[in-house]
Image (cartoon, rainbow, N blue to C red; front, side, top):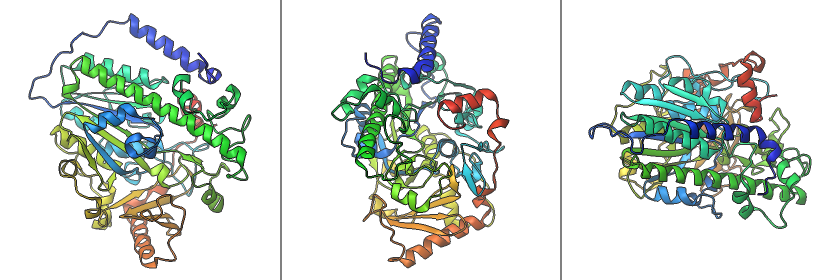
Length: 506
């Protein structure tokens, strides 16, 4: 079978073959897992899909068939349609989802006035922060995490009873999770699995890629070049002088096709996992939720990036971690299974911080312990810094307009550039430097692609949003810029090697 990415995936393929061999030679799981007592809470299986933007799923309106299995599965459960990530890259966003806290409170992010993750390592989860895994262990759960992105091991993985890094494709990561659940199903289990296939380098199987490729089909060399962002057989997408040039747009079409194929790859793996849960009798006692940490930019805002020119890498409008536009902050959150309302779409504003409180509510378990916020946090801002359960909203969904004007949603902790923040309230989206300098105000109802700055036309909204940023900065919860991580050279060599595999560090 054709494989244009063979040279890029040789190490992963050997690891995959070795893992599958060990699995085949290991002790087989029982045909039927041991059953929990009927009054025990359900198992929880969370699947984090790194770098999955919401608008590339069929259930979110995408025109390509990237997610047929997920679209069907969530039709039997609940989909949150308008979810904001607390940060545009992996560590602070997943930590927010699993603690219910903004990055400025949980501490797992980059610090300093000008961030550059290629040079600077992030901080870890702060001591005393309670993760969902630690909380569920206190409720009697067995816990395990299997992750294909090493950033999960900056304080999150260590809160699980079992945890392991594996640079394997989604199908194998999910099979690993299934094996663990079957072996441990006599007690309530919480398993988190992080798949990394949509993250660069994107190297989908040919059978998934071929249906998405434009004609004429690119050469293997061209496809391999766009496993990242080009620069050899294609123009480098992030360094192109003219983002609208024909050769740049042609390369972009192929890059998006490769990205979409990785989503289809993950979709099939999740569908197979659900089939396996059904076959072994675990599906009726398991709550499954699939979500992403952030999206990916494909020159959506290259002109804005050129105007602001703040990325220390000299890149414009590609990847993630460098901005707070919707292609990075609008993420999917899907759920089905035990306790989850069926056939529901929640249009009301949601934050990824709400995930842990909501699944605990669905499981019928106590909430995460309350967090003591600094005394100078205004009440209206405080509600945006900590997640809330949306179980009631899923049971009785209401039109988005009933909640949208009141709720603030925040994002911070970029990885490349100055300390930028974003504020959402209703249809309004404000991006600013944390020192209060406005960058842009968008009306997402009239301008969902965020291409027209509405600040001059709406000075009242600008003043209101600026006041939120000023209050956030002045409060003790707005100290995101003061946290400093280590230098890459100070980290363990194995950690550095794993992160270099994903292009994170030099």
